[in-house]
Length: 297
Image 1 (cartoon, helix red, strand yellow):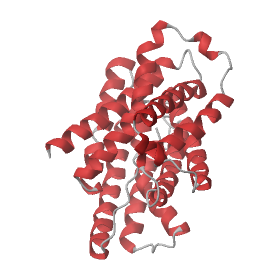
Image 2: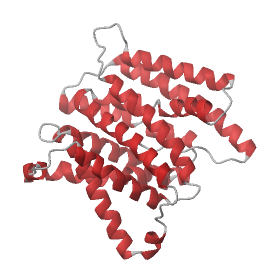
Image 3: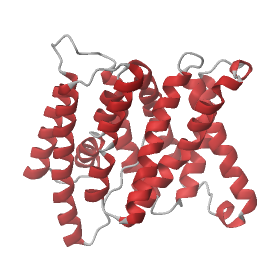
């Protein structure tokens, strides 16, 4: 449990650091330029590892390049939406809507993988969707259309998770990360000012470093956490970042502690846990490996 706690602490810290870094850079760089720095630094680090370890280099193949292209194109869209949402919305709203990803994955699995929509799964999905309505509270003065960006990012995260599950049958985690950064770098650069590097200065060093590091540590910490515990344990621990980021937003950015957002996020996590418990029992009986959702950040 100690290692699980340490890896989850690293994951939560990485998520929060990434969000704070994006907010710090928003006045100087566009979302495409921020993600260009992230992809370029991640690719440089992975290439360095490939030079040091030939074993990793041998694991990078192009046998499923079409699937990598599909995965990373969708994740690219989700990553841009998430980053833009961080610049427009309170932190707590974005993080709360992120936790709907497992429910969208369940729906996508029914539609595209032919999985059965059981009564328990349907009820947990309905509970999550009700939580989303509470968070968004449409029709009230507090509703912000930009929240749909965070919701869209959660949906793309669910699609990415399903494709990643297919890729892990043949590709290593290193290969998946390598293709992610290699494919997304030109996409991000295409939306950036070609001369944006000239605008970088020393005042941006810390948030740029945080953005570069968290691009890899989020994936690493979450993957390691799932090695030490099942999703039914990891997801509730990951939910701790909602109240933490809410306090940070309130303390340093003057963001209100929205009771509806916190109540809605509690409903979402309740639905997710309910669904995870049911899925865990079913997969345990079938001897299957549970689906691991990765971040779209």
